Image (cartoon, rainbow, N blue to C red; front, side, top):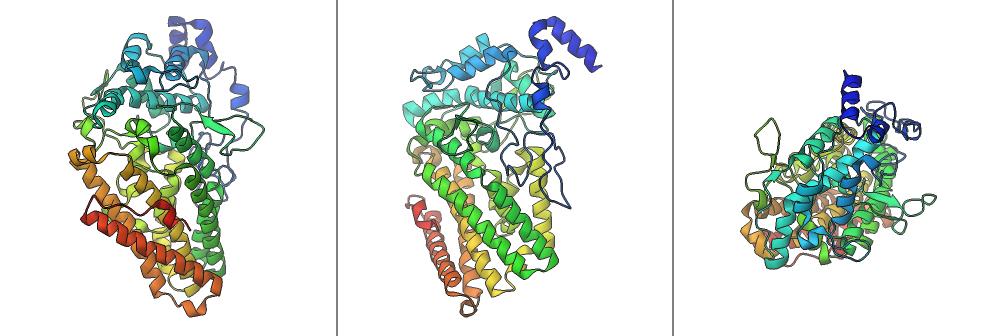
Length: 493
């Protein structure tokens, strides 16, 4: 059946070009398929359900893809590649792109073919197409909002209908990857980089984004910062699994050591993000395109996909409303969703459902194990564990507070007031971050500091002091939306 369909498709359009992308004839198949499935993660109770996927969870690559993303599409998709290259507000050569002039929609409708992607099975190409089509979909739908925002500082309404030349291939690729047809956080960041020097490791100075919306420095820093920080998630994942294993086997010293390892690794993640995400600056110049179609005034009735058998509107959270799996892991591991169930951004708002299957499965596993073992209560049974738990939560709080600050600062007050759904959503997130700060303070107050070493006691006191400041600051904001938030730099430990 497949062979017959593929042959028909090849005969119908550009036979010599298309033949390269069938499962059997792809020219890079020998290279792409030569990479073994990533099985480096020592998990007895969990393994990647799709080990051949680009996104696996491992102690080798962490949450980053197991191979660098494909940054050049096969020649068959030449027009798609060309439109994406011309798309940014400011292109790499310094000239103005389609989004600046408001011509992206017309170019898509007039020039973009409806590519047949049914014959594409290579996971690396599928991941690249998913990135490119989901970014193009966001740009197309939100282009009118960006134009309106630049003129009035309000978003207005986005396009309601996604045309079939984007909708059909996006849905096909998303279905094949077992993901939703929308732009997801890891796709925009972790699968959107290329190395300048392939022989050198991933670092802030050696990577750059593949696709862009605005082309501004803040967008560059947003992508590069998240990728460079994620390079250290291998250690975060190792530490998380060590915490679960030690709790399961009731090995207190190993539990404390794993908490220290988690704090150190997350500290490095936060340090890198502090270098790259200082203030929102011109974050608003690309933030428009990170909005989703759920709980947003620009899509009050969702988005329709042309030539879709279902007439139901699509409603998904956007990158700007979601978070990386790093935040989800901390929330699940330390059982933070029970603090304020409505406010647990990664868990209860459906963000994890948008992630790649392996990542989604891993986070579900951690959540189930942490609940079953009672990681939080186990930590509180020992003063030393409580202190290490406070230090680890301090790093989670720093990460989540920075995420919250970017969310709050990215939307001007005028449009936030007009958007009741977003304003309510932001209040829920404010409450949740405040609850994390309260947990840090409460845990510190309940532990026996006299039994601890001077170094641990001093660091725990510092974290608790900063957490108390965060708690008071966010409490004021909940009572008065005009209150100035605490600078992120003040809670960096």
